[in-house]
Image (cartoon, rainbow, N blue to C red; front, side):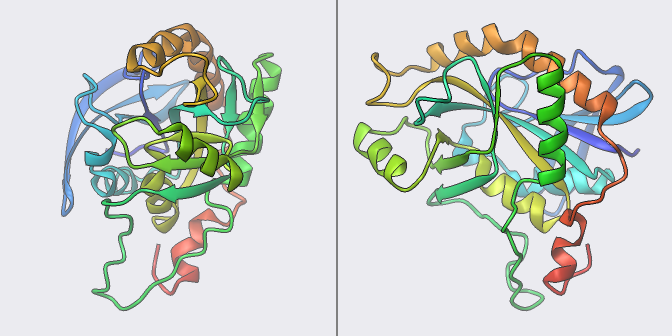
Length: 263
């Protein structure tokens, strides 16, 4: 059982309708059990993982990120496309549009954020480019070909959740250079980097953040926006799954080698 590519579906992206010959799979590793789907798309092997569970039952601060990323690595996945519903701090990144993230600010508090827990010594992995530049450029090109609105490059502020942020926090995040705010990119992107996986996040802007939005925030608002964007995100993901080169020319695979670990 192997997969070359993986999709991690965030809020509103729970189904893998684009895949054929789907099969539910349970993978157990030392971090926990992971339920996902494997299937094919245009002859390519693909794994689909619903980040919050198939019924959106797992809140962002309780997701077993280590088990999820380890499961994908064990399947042989090399490239990961993740989706994320986000609020915007940047007036240029409007609701209904897509954004490819290239940097993050970490404001999480209680999450285990590394595979390297000291058992094999101290390991430091470079995250100058946490989101694969090569994969981002490919996805950006596909979005342009499909005439979908997209920004290539943004700073994702990861908040702990599950509450939404206060207007004061949003003002702070904006002053620090944040463009988007969400609750899931860290530690997912960090673990993918440590595992040597190419990882890209397609952020879907569902609303402006607290204090910028003219209305009080609600989860139902996010779900409504995601439903409206579902067709376009499906088109973009399908194009990417069919056209992304399987051969990698980036430095992602060597991340743990650089840190003195075997990837």
